Amino acid sequence: AQKITQTQPGMFVQEKEAVTLDCTYDTSDPSYGLFWYKQPSSGEMIFLIYQGSYDQQNATEGRYSLNFQKARKSANLVISASQLGDSAMYFCAMKSLSGSARQLTFGSGTQLTVLP
Amino acid sequence: GAGVSQSPSNKVTEKGKDVELRCDPISGHTALYWYRQSLGQGLEFLIYFQGNSAPDKSGLPSDRFSAERTGGSVSTLTIQRTQQEDSAVYLCASSVTDRYSGNTIYFGEGSWLTVV
Image 1: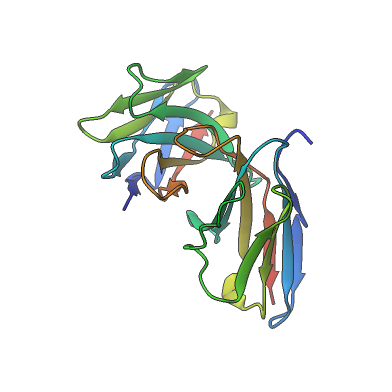
Image 2: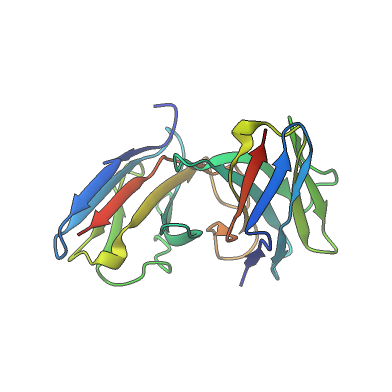
């Protein structure tokens, strides 16, 4: 079974500063993918970044980077130079790439508030 | 269309009535997912379709819930004899392919269901 844990229900960050959102996971699958999604108050789930378990380098997408530490089973999202529009709920998710389960398993989310 | 399209965007129904929620995935996407998100909660997997394979229905909460996917494209999620606890946002997602791949999963904007 897969499990995603996000231990920060809420986070605050000052505009233009960097923030790290924590995500740890548990799986017995040898191959898996890790995702981060942003959900603003409008409700849409917006894909941010993806990391494969066999990727050698940490994923980066613009101001988003994924701090992947495989041995610690952590996949923290780093947002640099926070903007007011970054205020939203952030979900970490994973999917097996080798097992029979194909669905994304989500964490409980972190509500990020960017302060002006 | 460019993204995953869901309809209706909002639905208010009386307890005991049946509802149908529609999802039109991104063209060419063979994998399709349904998730449910209750107010302030994370995402709960419901069902997954991949090409012509038998769907993974392991997340459906009761036999009042069913889904079909016609012609490998449009999917309909049906909830029979709706209950108040069915009130939630129902999110549909699709990806290019699922098999042994970490392809990005794109979500629609959801169908907000309220059972009164």
